[in-house]
Length: 189
Image (cartoon, rainbow, N blue to C red; front, side, top):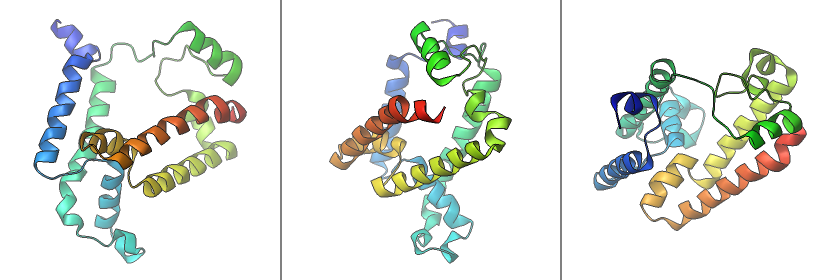
């Protein structure tokens, strides 16, 4: 692998996988949990949400390190999308392109990871777009709370700790994603 491939191409599983495993080993060794929804809980508690809800009344100062995960995710995403990506278009199969055009009305030739039909300014300011955002946000928040964590927490951290509830939650996340993609999204778009 040359330097250009290392910088501009996704890392292969045999590089990225051991890095994730090493990070999870360190988190388990130091008794830390990982998950983005817990980071949001910490951020809300630090901002004073404990005055409005008992859910946010905990010693959030112990979890300040979690906020570095959020900052790292934001900075890493920004750097990779703005400086480490040659071509921002997504390389997808011809069958997927045909489904996007024929069934959902998306433009698969758009040079972006996020389809403008969902994430464009027009979609975000329309009543339907606002409704979808509010409903989606509610479902993600409710689901994360009901499942006791988010997809990253269960699928990465929980499975690393060999937790049966995390296995069940991860299976549920995948089933829900498949149902949304194949049964619900065609009716929305």
